[in-house]
Image (cartoon, rainbow, N blue to C red):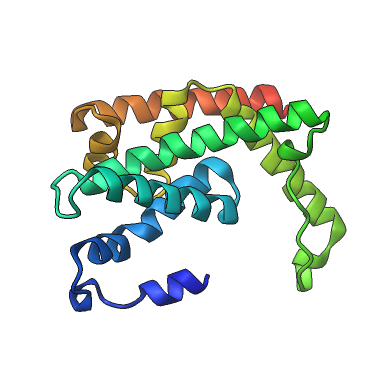
Length: 183
């Protein structure tokens, strides 16, 4: 949260090209990783790693910078998720699949509502885990607010393919969520 407040500085006032790229793309990279991981703190860690990798390999004013960062965010988040699942299996616990209960005020403090939301999140995670990596990626990118063109650039496909890919991924997700969480 502190980083986001600091990023509200206009990219026009930032002299360094990499800083300008960071200010412009960081919120979106975090949002993409957060959609995959469903954990804001882990998503910020992934975003930092993605920017470090980009800084080491590419010029900040490269025309592909945004697409590269978006694609890398998806892949790094998927890798982090797989690592967490492997670690969870090694430790003999299913803690990685369970959503934490957040104590808040009002209706958020209701234990029943918190339990239902935690179960819904776990169902979504299980359904997403059953999808192909490409389907998870297109869903994460598109539902993070990227346009079709930005999603296509991040996935390395033409813009015309995104609609079909998204429709197929959403249909597969609906099928999997119905299978995972029959109601």
